[in-house]
Image (cartoon, rainbow, N blue to C red; front, side, top):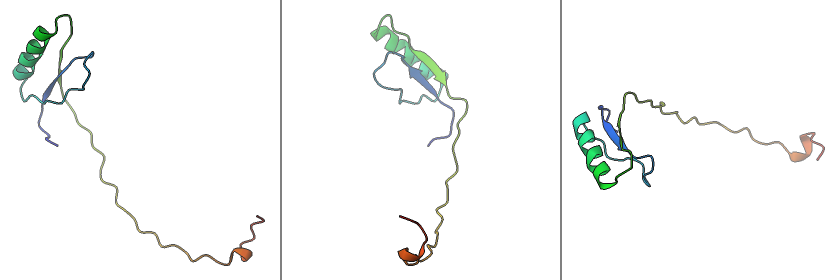
Length: 78
């Protein structure tokens, strides 16, 4: 993932989520204006990503299994 700042154009009535990252506010604003002209009455928001969060990779742990004893000796009544 590109970890540089970016802007998105979002229409809450849109059928798809925004996917194009704009690398300047001016580019996103121009795109919002273009889209708004093509869909009168719809709102197109220019959103600026300000933070990102990412969880670390969880290591895989190997666990050794203990050999099972004879089921007749486990003292479980069923």
